[in-house]
Amino acid sequence: MRVPRFYVPQPCAVGQECVLPDTTFRHAIQVLRLGVGEPLILFNGEGGEYFAQISNVSKRSASVQIDSFAAIDTESPIHLTLIQAVIKPDKMDFALQKAVELGANTIQPLITQRSVVRIGKEQVDKKLQHWEGIVVAACEQSGRTRMPTVQTPLTLERWLTTPFAGTRLILAPGDFPRINALPMDLPMPVSLMIGPEGGFTDAEVTTCVQAGVLPVSLGPRILRAETASISALALLQQRYGDL
Image (cartoon, rainbow, N blue to C red):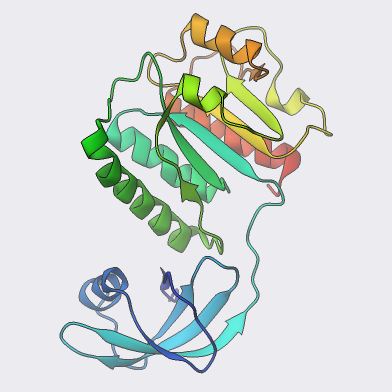
């Protein structure tokens, strides 16, 4: 049986007894029905994993005893940022989940001309909280030891003016280089732009190229936004990372 794994955003140390955060308590105790003495793995996003066992359970809280630490590193050798145009909620969740599994370090939601979903100022905090929950769950499942960050949504124009060291790629249909043909000495880190349903407009692609963003293609077929992000991230990891 696989030992359940949980993210705890707090300092951890061998020999320490700590109280599980409320969300972890609900998942571990109320959903998985773990009891005293059962093992679990904790990580706090600072690297490595802590092996622990449940030491106390009450109606509303639970404590664990941390027994050992393993300096496990499951992070990719390249730093990847997914610039994902906001798409329909279920598709956006899927794209974020798979991006985390494929090693993305940062996720930047993007508002574009063809974005079907619009996020008002009053919805931003709620959306970010939801997306961060998707990221946490994906890290717990995939064995990530560092927690990717989800940035506040930006317009395309605002993002293009944000300072960036490395390479910016935009996925676009057309006669552009394939990812597996990019030079091996590509300046790092890499940001990958994925459009919304309907893709980027021609004007947006032109604006990006004029701003120094390198257009790349996945071939002759038109992929859905969530499929494109998975495919492109996997190809980048295969060429520069650890796939």
